Figure 1: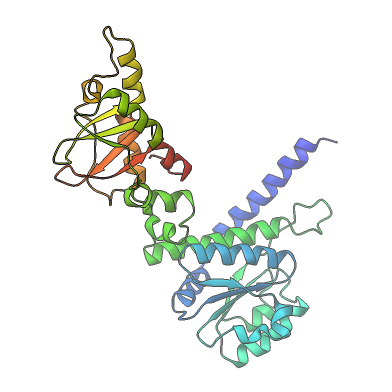
Figure 2: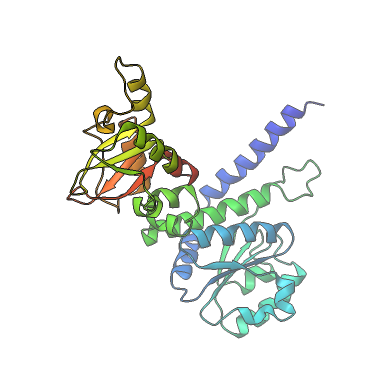
Length: 322
């Protein structure tokens, strides 16, 4: 038994079905788009068995791409949840045969309330096809299952059709990546587009010393600050220098090194800093990486310290550069 060939045949069978479905798309697809766009309420998706599982995925895709949607199981609808469907909603029902018992039982009630119905079925003459205002064809020549029983090709096609509807709606609505991120604030894109310097910078108990502080005292404060850096300000509290643990190690290698010397002697007196706390954290990470630093001091326009942004905080928050 050549399992690789079986897998390849499965891919080809399902791919052929997708290409055939793409070729037969017609006005009904556009009608479905218009019907969803006109919906003032929610797009409610329903289906039984594998169709129900695909429907739940479709509802999640619609919801995350700007079309308010949720999945409702027909059985639950029959036992009280039918009230979840409002007069301003649209129902998208999935059934390959168009005759799923649990689904067909709720169809008369849907039409009684004049709720728009989009039917995804392989038989336009079925109960679902007859009740639907718009019918989208999900018929397939054969299932990838060698017995021709298990929903395989048909569920793949249905899911692809759901994706096609969602993508077309995104285009019609002018849905942008910023909009997508707003529905995914915890995802990588949401973090990249919404988390700013002000959300992650440290502002409390910063390791700050004056220009007349000795290296010996600076080391104590550096250890307490746990940032591996010391921020140095002058008598007017203006940020003037940055001493890192790397600077300290290099100082130890110099002749005549003394802990009684001023810390600013060994500090970087032209450090990279930034003033705009509204800058995206992902862009701040780019600044840190480009300058090969670990700490980015944040100041006012007058160079007064207001916080610091450490590369470890960015990494721990899941921020990634472009």
